[in-house]
Every structure is written in structure tokens, then in C-alpha cells.
Amino acid sequence: MRAQFVLSEMWIGLRRNLTMTIAVIITVAISLALFGSGLLVQQQISHMRQFWDERVSVTVYMCTDVSPSKTCQENGAATNEDRESLQADLEALPEVSSVKYVTASEAWKDFQDRFSENQALTEAAQEGDIPDNFRVQLKDPNQFDAVLNAVEGRQGVDSVHNDQKVLDQFFELLDGLKWAALVVAFVQLGAAALLIGNTIRLSAYSRRRETGIMRLVGASNFYIQLPFLLEGAISGLIGGIIASGFIVGAKFLLLDRIQSWFNFDISLSGGSVAYVIGLSLILGILLCTIASFLTLRRYLRV
Image (cartoon, rainbow, N blue to C red; front, side):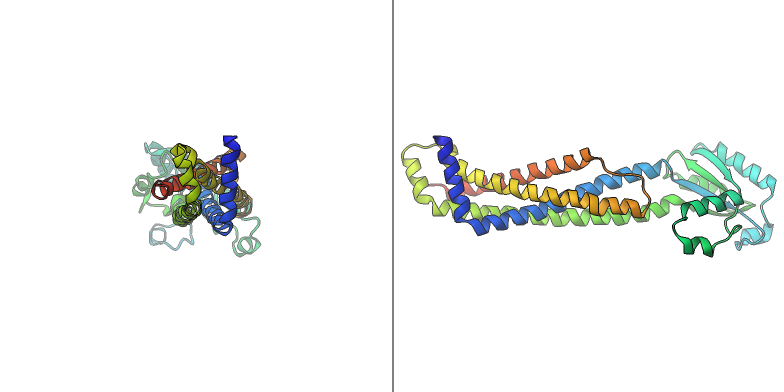
């Protein structure tokens, strides 16, 4: 009987403030969608960083007869002695995990394989444009300076290229998108909390006569507040369910497309998406319930 009364009061409250309730649901849905999308982007970035940290390398290009650098023009093309000496010194560095020598023909074939889908780029280059080089795998990708200091200005060395710097710029862009989404999400969550508080306040005011009678007959605070708290929780739940659709859409329409554009063989699992959806639902329900509770403490003092 009591449960039926509480549910009927909750339904009356939602129906009386229908437009405000819809506004709360939409605001909660948008804010949770942004929050969830930010979490998905964060997880995607974390997976991508781990993937590339294991594969990023430093490339040491050797001098050829046509190398434009000053060192190469002064000393000429790298000799076999230069290559052997450089490889031995690189392998002796404690920061280096492995060293691989790549001939010019192997480098050209690798270039064609990597950019096989970019026909204009492969046609603009030709064999011999990429000199032979050493690909140095570091134990810690941040220890690039150790390799640079060991090879810079050395005879036979044309230039040193660090893949990590290119990736850092890309990840900085993704980090910016992630933080922008999270900041907007928290602003929206704040607006949703204010909206739900205002909605509950209007609902409590319109039913002040009923709540006054309930107090006179000895109803507890919890019993009086429960319909209002459920109103907030239901609004948060519906907003969270709508946001779940946006989060799934962000995964398949945004993150998976980014993955295909950059040929990353890294995709978030269904468990990761389910975790973000569950967290967003809990956040939406808690936010609306707590906002309702704090509002009721002030406006239900009969």
C-alpha cells in the first residue's frame, strides 16, 4: 500500500512538471553523452599510447652521395666501417633495446607497403630517396636524447628522426579533444543539477499541502522525501539510457573511424564500452538523486 502511494506520488510529480522533467532528461542525456565520450576517448588514447610505445623507434639515416646535410657533403657517403662502428656503439648503449639495419631497398619496399593506399605519395617518391638507416628500439621512448647525443654529428650519419615526437603531437590533439569534452560535460552536469533542483523545488511547492498533512499524521522524513527522490532518480536513469545510445554511437561512428583512418589495429572492447555506460548511468542517477535530496532539505521544512 505504501509502495503504491509512493509510486503514485512520484508519477503525479513527474506529470505536473512534465516540461521541466523533459528539460532535465535532455540536459542529463547530453552531459552524460559528453562525459561518456570523453572517457571513451581517454581509454582509446591509453590503448594507443601503450601500442605505439612498444613499437616507436628512432631512425638514424646514413649519408649517401646526394645527402644535402653539411656533414654528408664534407665527409661523403657512409662507409661500411662507419655503419659497423655506429651499430656497435648503438648496441652498447644501455638505453637501447634493439638495433636493426635497414638497407635502402628494404626501406623503399617498407615505404611502399606503409603508404600503399596513398598513390600520389608513392608516385612522387622513388627508390633511393630513402637512404639506408638504423632503426633503434628504446627501452624507454623518452630516452631519445641518449641516442641523439651518441650519433649527432658523427661521420656517416645524415639525420636522426624520432617517431615519438610525431606521435606526441597527435596524442596532444586527442588529449585536447578529451579534455574539451570532459569540461563541457561537467558544465552540463552542473546545469543538470540546478535544473533538477528547480524541478524538485516546484514539485515540493505544488504539493506542500499534502506533505504538511503527512507530517501532521506522523510520516517520517524519508517517507515524505521518497517520491521526490524517485523523481530525480527516474529522470537521471532515463537521461542515462538516452546517453548510452550516444556513447555507443561515439564508439562506432567516431573512434572506429579514427582507427580506420590511421590504420590502428586497436579497438575498444565491448567491456570497455559497457563500463563507460554503467558509470554514466550511475553518475546520472546519483547526481539527480543528490540534487533532489539537497533541495528537499530546504523546501520540505513544514
